[in-house]
Amino acid sequence: IFHNQNTSTNSPSHIFFVRLHLTNMPESSERSRRILDIVALFLGELRDGLTMINMQSAFLISSKGYSEKQVGILFFVFGMSQFLFQAPAGYLMDYTDRKITWLGVAAVLTTLFTVVTATTAEDEGGNIGFMILIKFLQGGITAMIPPGLNSITQGIVGSVGMTSQVSMNEMMNHLGTSILVLIGSLIAYAKYPDIGVLFIVSPIACVGVIFFLNRIHPEDIDHDAARGLVLEASPDNPEILPPSSGNYAAPEIRVPGKKGVQTMPSFNFWGAKGDDSSVVTATPKADTPLQVLREPRLLLFTAICFLFHTANGCVLPLVMQSLAIGNGRSGILLSGCCIILAQLCMVASAKICGQYSVVYGRKVLFLTGLFTVPVRCLILCILVSLRDEAGSSL
Image (cartoon, rainbow, N blue to C red; front, side, top):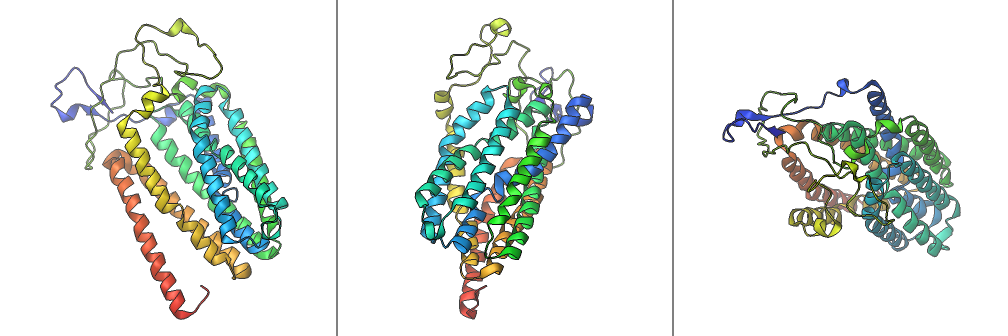
């Protein structure tokens, strides 16, 4: 959204909505964008499917006799590893020009750790120390997937097309997760109690990721655009759309003049030097880590996300564990259904967010999502109470 600097700032009619015409992209870039949708579909398994600890916990409890305490320790280690490695993973994906390679490496390694978990876990947590190590390594590797996919996405479609494409990525991610978890759950139901074979789905999904990822042309990724250092639209040549009829009042953003841009990250660990030929005095560049940490709005938003995940993160694992314990093959199938239903709802949510964020703004949608957490917990409490009163295992 840009403000026309040649008109009065008091006139709302001069706030322009700029939409990226994906159909106007170069043919090669458009082809890479379509392939990116398929990559996101298969990444759904590696990001949220059997690779994640939710389904693995059901496997460890129902098939390997792990206690809830042991599974809880693995959850904690996995989550803390993701937390510790998220920022370095984001830096790596921002710094490197080999984004496709690094995302492929992350896909292969996280799949490897999933298979190792399924094949080496001993009954009743006999090798819990080794499992903790595996979960720590796997958590660090999976932290590379979201920034890897997002950096490639922005490098292909640019910041103007980011909202639309991220919405599509999320839809394909969650659809892929639901499909692959459904396949894995049916395999586990058929093979119970020897359900480790269900994790064959992970290598299959990984092959799909690597195959389609390597069909994206590296030259279609603008690494400067991926870092947010490219101005892709200006008041001189925007696509002007009529003012939105929604309630969202967009902030005014003035487009700076065209200047040289520092295309390398503002810091690096290897002492690499960028090409200074395109750099002019007082050119914009990325903030340093200290500057980022001192940004109050970012810190507040980070705290909100932390509190949200604190409330939300334990719900699905607890439900899945309660279904898996003592319910045999039906328990593992119902545990998979928890993920499938959740992911299908997320497909719809991603569509809604992508379509209506430009109309109503992100804050309203974000608050709506936060509000659903206590509502879901209330429903679960009611269902558990009804189950206990009826004396039913379900």
